[in-house]
Image 1 (tube, rainbow, N blue to C red):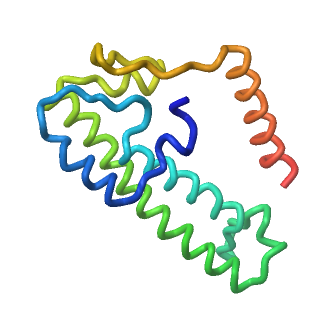
Image 2: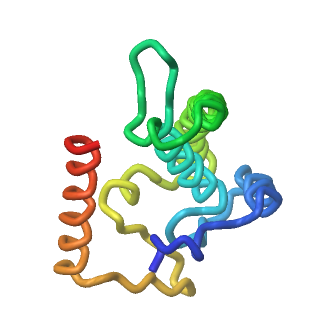
Length: 153
């Protein structure tokens, strides 16, 4: 339930308002990605998708570069560079958020990121989890898709 795009896609204003509450010593009621974390997911996806079309005329050529006109490849390559710089800044902010949450809110964000489980306040409904077989099937499909991209494109 928490991995669906509809759960964490928000406007930049919503993410900014969420970040305004970071310094408050209150429990985190957010189940799954918070609004700022949802923006990070979008940035990661944008970086990965633009990488499929990258063309820097030296060593890196994406698997879909040949199907697009050169001006489109160049535009996407420029976007890829912008997304890369934004991603580096977002990674630094992500690490800082883990430290701030530990220091200010006394909440460990690393364990839920790794385990997928989080201690929630009593009045917050825990998310519905998919069956393990479904999760393993989706993981296998993702692995096959990634291997196909790497080997055949």
